[in-house]
Length: 88
Image (cartoon, rainbow, N blue to C red; front, side, top):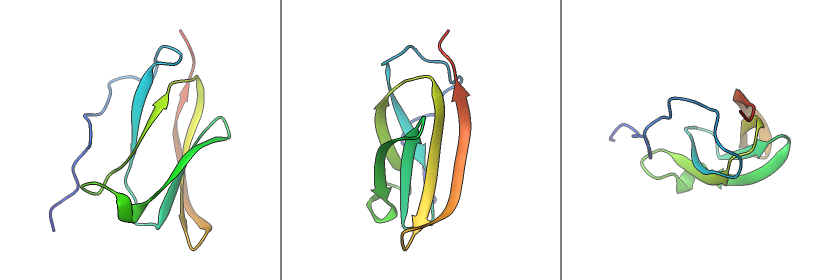
């Protein structure tokens, strides 16, 4: 099949204005991915629902720690939290 493509181009920075809407994308071979911000759930997406291999969330920006946790059969198999952000 075709290689996955990005839903949106990657951003050059991580510092956003509070409550500005942004798109967060994830790539996985696990069954599901849960996105959290500062420990609060932003939603879970199923890999089967990915568009062109990409899962996307539209969320309001807030400073803190954004984390994606991949699960299969309800058990975490990978987690990634590459971004810590602070308001300017």
